[in-house]
Length: 428
Image 1: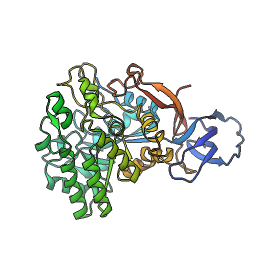
Image 2: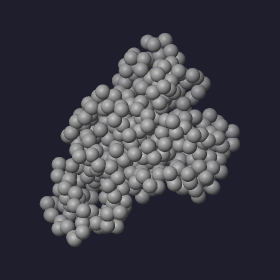
Image 3: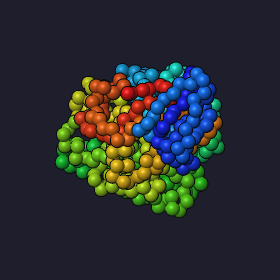
């Protein structure tokens, strides 16, 4: 560990609005020791590592509350270590790992394994435990033991909880433990074995996943939350209908939160006409009207957080459009997509973007990340918001390269990721 690290001449992006402008920031023993703003220069104590961040923005380390690390059991796609390397390259210092591993994360020893595997990477992994045993939807997992083992939330993500009574029981049990259930909203009676959006399905003559499949299930969760006062979190919102109903539920005071992903505010289902499986995910890419609605939901606060839903698959698995598994990687492109499609067009300010990628997901999970307060852990990202780069899949740190942004030019390059006072990624 660097006992003393002084970051000089950075432009501060504080999502909580306590600090602004140029700053010097001193790190001591892995924590923020002091912050000097308003042009005040901080002298470097002896034996200090000095990092000149002129031209770079300094923000809290990013927090992704929805990733699939594939480990244990699917390490040909990703390992916890390779996923954490990709995360550090993208500016993330904390990840919440979804439980659809092999076996599913429904036992304390699997959660312990995930935490231990990440311990030496500089990126903390916070496990999300399964709602049901083996994610089979039949019997609830042991929430108490899983919470004691480090679960920060519960989800059967990848599979919807089909039974409403079981979902309510899970929400209430999680709430007594100070946790949330994260709901994968997909009414399977409407979605069936669909693989793309309903509008693209009509063009491509393949089975579709209609927007109603997401919205109808989200409506159920909203009613459960509002009628009982029990919180719930809706995963990967993609549809304008879902945004509208969640906005209405929030206005009535329903204890409901939600997230979206970069691909839902930057891409639309016209890309599916290429029949390239790297544009296939679940929920699928939807129409331009849905993209606009997701952006509006981010602007007005309906959508609380931005997550990647990082879902690595090998090139072989993604080779055939019809049979490929759904999912895309996103840890290394997420910040840049947010800058390119939200900040540069003026939809969100930079602090608003960073808030949805750091402090808000941290608050939802109840973890000590995403803040620039003196005394807090020294977890930061330093990035150049004006620098452009072209996404080259083979250059990504993830074991899998199934990015929907391949060949695209994005703005925003992560130069340093600092975790617990240590530089865990640098690109100069």
